[in-house]
Image 1: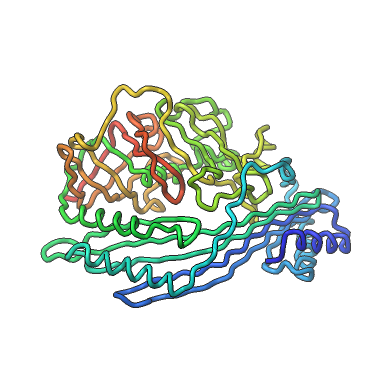
Image 2: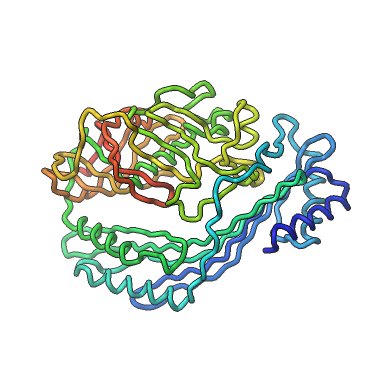
Length: 448
């Protein structure tokens, strides 16, 4: 992709030629290499270069037209600006989008920069080695059917006719391993893990392998659970899955669209236990590839969502912030329309002292949920309810017994208010950092 300065100059020249005075452009490019292996042999090796550019143009009536392109050379930009200008005469008049008031403000962090890409042969060798060690970790592990190692370079930019000019770039490497077991007279069991880093050289494949093996082996000894009420402990990944599934709680666009469990007047309400704090923080040190600005050029920043159980802020784009008399938060995504989404969750315990501390070492009749499944089908986001299959363990006198097949059900509002303990040690996942979270009681349904 061309440099942001070159793109800005080409856009300015094309806009002048077309008598366009107001426009902005957001673009991203990804250069990715990924590999998969199967039974000791390379299975898939892919390389791709993908780019997307969104162009918005305002006409004299201040209605906006939007188009997308993959071409940022002068000819491509001129065509995109011309097309967006033509579309602007059909743009919405009510709550028309505008530049972010912070599109030229200083950003709060630094882009991670790019790391050298490793040769494809190195990726294949690392993954083949991990598969071989996993298969040797236990005789019951018959295959690693899902696996992958990838590295990608990401470039992003935003410019507008008011002088905004931003760019950042970073690299991300990732590995995932997912096993399948075969034992006579027993059901197949599976488990997986992943790791992310800035580059392949920093990627902890050994830790990913170890976690996958330990989880898989722990699921070999499984049993049914009785249907009933249980104290539940959510792993970091499971709890963040719920937060993401019910993000309409703090999404300003959802609230304005009346597609939320919250209303504009919900700020200040106690929506969770006073033990819980949640911040959306794209600039968190553990957020590999954290972005310094959003699709509208607004700088990203830590946004406290829940503080000591109280709903403190919503996530905003420039448009939602204007309509709700707030400030944009750096959570806008540019596309055919502007949408709002979380960047990276940071969940942590508040300073409020819990009535009791808990530990898995001496827990009894407690379900530890490691992974929630089928969120696309089992979550009723506008009702707040969920009923989801899960992978996890029943803790009996501090010992773990894998749950054969079961679902957990509840209401997100009750779950948040029923939190009795938030552990201090956090764990990194792809969508955030979070500790284990203990909930007083949830319904668990076992397989009859």
